[in-house]
Image (cartoon, rainbow, N blue to C red; front, side, top):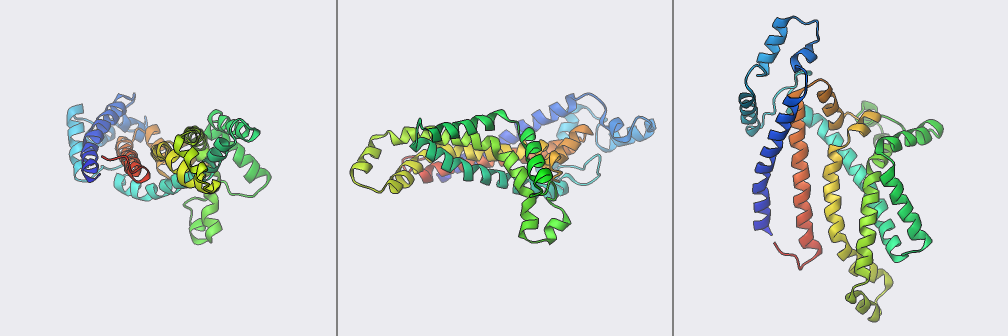
Length: 316
């Protein structure tokens, strides 16, 4: 396993190099001069020229990429053109909030999808199964921003049970547990709804396949308790594809929080990337994309490691 882990980690720099090239090419292909957009149309040509020179925008594209990647290797992701702060500082400020929101969304997805998937598989073709399947269809059909607006209208405006904003605020940090965690509830549900639907369907199909295996009939014939059969023998084996999808979706959630963070005014990485795209803040876009890619790669490696823990037959 350790040799496999070493080989996978050696692939990370190559993948990040490809990601950096693609991100650099896409940002440079966007129309408009970032210096002009940042300073405004009324700014003097001298100020625009000075800003372009400061951020190496006056150099050729290969030179720009070479200078940027040389700094990245040393851990320097550059400075924001709009905020004039170091990108690493912005990431250090916003990454913990985005991770907390992603963890909350994944926790909601796991807490709902595991029992629903198991129950739907055990009660196959019953009204319970149809109800769970209908819930997953709704999860696929309703976009997360639409669900977010519905949740805000029902639980914040009409019922006044949960706050709309407050994540990362001084009031939430200085308050008690409810003040700190209650702002995460609505965005976590909106963010994790799609993942809940995907994981529920996956676990249901995986459980149905496992329950039809010969060793499950043997377990029943031995007189094992139903709970032991389901949890120890069925669920453990059905979790192998489930863990893979959950790990991949967790990395995916970190990268797609833009709309949720915007709606709930969350000061995370998604809102920072959105502002950077609007203002053509190239260093922020490139730096945040690299960080998100690192998390996505690490989640995939973690999923592979979980394989061996869940199924002793798997060896790397």
